[in-house]
Image 1 (cartoon, one colour):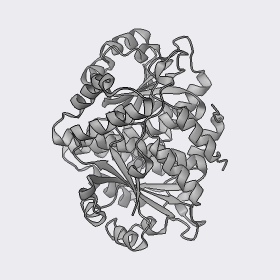
Image 2 (cartoon, one colour):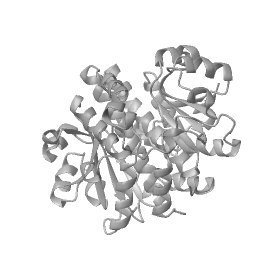
Image 3 (cartoon, one colour):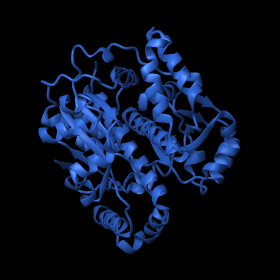
Length: 214
Length: 214
């Protein structure tokens, strides 16, 4: 255990903002990017199901096309890295079995001892289609929160983005064939020196209207 | 800017787990809890709308009743702190105006210069009821991710929980009258020395099946 002091956490969270203009010349080092990948893999999810995949778009031509599907927002091409947070499409029993297999192997627990957990997971996934997708999409947003917080802690800028055509992203990236669907995007890199958004004071409601003690 | 080293981020994220048994005698200090409140208030959200409220349940009688509405899971009463992440119910034009007011005040920008942003926010909120709630609920899960990551960084244990009766939570806490609805819960405190879950190896799929480069 090697915690950080409160002031360091808060100073980095205050330093964070949704970067509008990235320095297109600055790249996140391979080691730092690997750390961000490792961090997002460690995100919590309901039952540990990890109903997601994170697609990192390295191909500049693809990024140009994705920008056109994202209201031409420049972060899509100018940020060092672009990651598409995708949800597993309509998972079912096979996904639960895969997870049970993994738990069994990692923890050295016989599969039959995991039957109660299996039943709980199956029960929880037995929802009408839209409800299942919404529940799992929320898990993807936990991962987004982990990613953005981790980037801020490392001193890496980021911008979460929902303003894109998800169906066209899916088609272009071939996600349906892989069993996934794009839900949210994050761009990451380093702010441009002249990004006006970097100077704008952070806007939050008064704390007493956001946190209420009962 | 005062970033932390990669190994410290990852060691704290690996130290984190969904705590099943809290030490009911150990309390989070008021200063540390305040840090967690400050951190979650800083969570990003679409347009910065902050479509949420975080209800911290201090009353032990209420926590006992909530435990009964949560499959009797002991964390609800045994953890140092319990926070209910709630989404704004069916927000509309008044909420957008409140946000515009706040931006105008904090940044010293005349309201009329924010009209483009106002129109974008109104357009984005103009979704059929269920879609609006689902979109905003995802924002709440970003805040959950920020909370859990922040707690881990501070060396505070936590457990995110979805296994509760949301409608009965709402009724008991009077959330509908306040305009909110419970979406997810986090308990926080310190792991009991004998929590078996603390010793279980973390289960994640193989990284190459979770992060894919395109």
